[in-house]
Image (cartoon, rainbow, N blue to C red; front, side):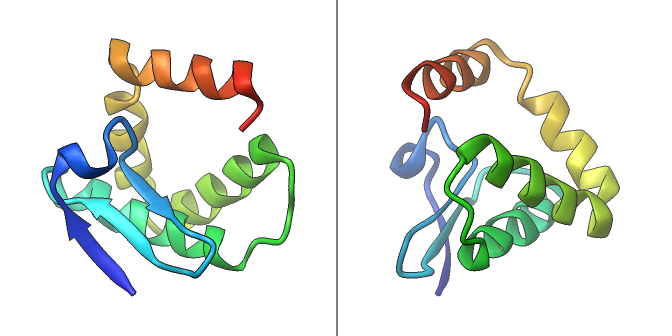
Length: 95
């Protein structure tokens, strides 16, 4: 199931894929970013890898292949301070 949710529900994430296959994507994002995230999160729903960095590389590659402009827009949006802090915390916590 794919749902588009308010920013506050999954902030600081842009999108999430849960173990049951449920995908949530923020509704406040530009459509090209949502298109990229849908492919990215759908890839996560079938990926069995356990290393989160490797999972992100593969999911980003899948999204890049189908939506290169959306990937670029997402990348640029990810350079904001709150996103950089989020990535640092994930790296530190290894998740």
